[in-house]
Amino acid sequence: MATPLTADRLLKALRDEGLHVVEHRNWRTNNRNHKGPWGPTHGVMIHHTVTSGTSNSVELCYNGHSALPGPLCHGVIDKDGTVHLVGNGRTNHAGLGDDDVLRAVIAEKTPPPDNEANTDGNRHFYGFECVNLGDGKDPWPAAQLEAIERAAAAICRAHNWDERSVIGHLEWQPGKIDPRGFTMDSMRTRIKGRLGYKAPTKPTTPKPNPPKAPVVDLSKLVTAARSNPAAKGTPVTYAGVRTVETALVDAGYLAKPYSDGHFGTATIAAYARWQRKCGYTGRDADGIPGKDSLTRLGKKYGFTVTP
Image: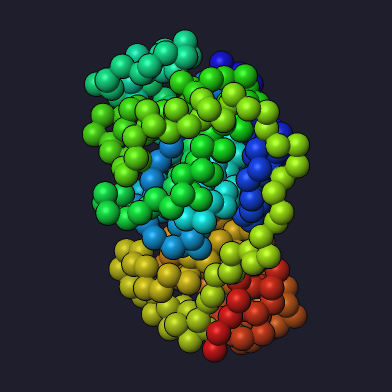
């Protein structure tokens, strides 16, 4: 049991453990605290994403999707061992789980089999989503496994917990299988060994090539902007729409519930406000993206534009 780490303490704990950490967008204020309490914290939960690719996985975990709003965890651990921080506070990663398992984690005992879903895990667990398809075939590179070990150990060290404070999603909620591809017993053994050593006093040398920014195709975006408002429901006609909507949310022009991958009327209105911010008026601020306004939005909020 512990008071949750602040954003600064979480970042420091991870870097002090020797991890390469990327701060994604507005992760420090990205949370679900308005839906319930965050803390006291009792442990760390490990998941797999059921996705491939770093950029897509990080964006998904930051934003969530129509059935489960983001953030979907606190950090995403990619294949090369980089930790991407996407949330700080309550996140949608654990869901309802077994109260007997929670009591075992608090007591730092081996968790019993999970057979109930009666306890809010989002309140009590830090969550790390690890990029893996979860099909039992997608490999777990050594760098990624070591990063999982280091990230879990960093939080345990910060709270003076032992390795039994770390569990997998499959040990918490009946029916879950993640993480698939290694056992949590083997991971706890690794964490136990790491906690037996003094953490490095300095972070490792930053990697020279940070993850590439998302790319938005202007022509596909314009097609979505012209066709989506008349479409029924909220179809995702082009994945780049979500990147632009996230930027409009960060800019304060679009309410987060409308960041759904559908360039509908709310997004049209939000983009028109951005165009007016860029100095456009009249028919030039009609909410249909142009190269100049989109390039300026991407430069400010972290994506690039292709014709």
